[in-house]
Amino acid sequence: MVKISFISIFKVFFKIGVILLGGGYVIIPIMKSELIEKRNWLNDDELCDYYCIAQCLPGIIAINMAILVGYKLLKIKGMIASVVAMSLSPFVSIIIAAKLLSTIVKIPFIEGIFWGVNLSVIVLIYLTLAEMWKKSIVDLTTLVWFLLILFLSLIRLSPVLLILVSIALGVIIQIIKDRKNA
Image (tube, rainbow, N blue to C red; front, side, top):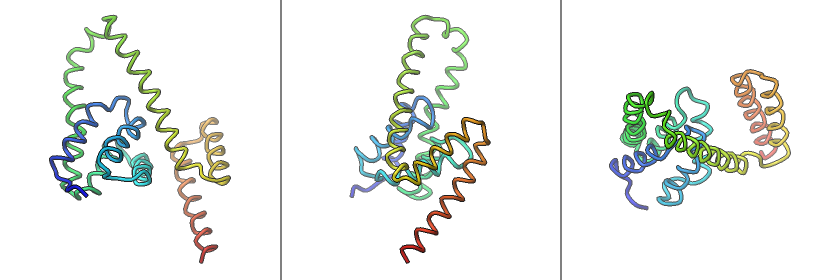
């Protein structure tokens, strides 16, 4: 395995930060390409697990992912490299955008850019959903649970309550499986 350095983590996460449009939901295909397919730093299961954990933690999903992956790769140094690198591009972009936004949003060319970016974000969200579906809906139990959570979401039950109940059910199901296999 290639030695993973602070600089290599910084470069990869800076690149991810630059190309990450649309927030946390589109990070899966980008991280899969950069961290699994190009560098073999993670496997699919680890990426899916980190994404699920990052969603449950307070804060920005992309930064939570950077923390988890950076720590796995190089402990505290990796965490620092990934978070600083991932945050740098958006930080600079927001400062520039704040200064320019009020004047440029009315330019037809810029409206076209936003339109195109919105479409690409929708595709990236779809790819994330497809990836998560393959890893999460694995049997009848998970399909039924998914449909129940979907229904409860549609009737506007609290997302926090849904997550807490899902965690509890996941633990209960795992305990039952462990006892059957023991």
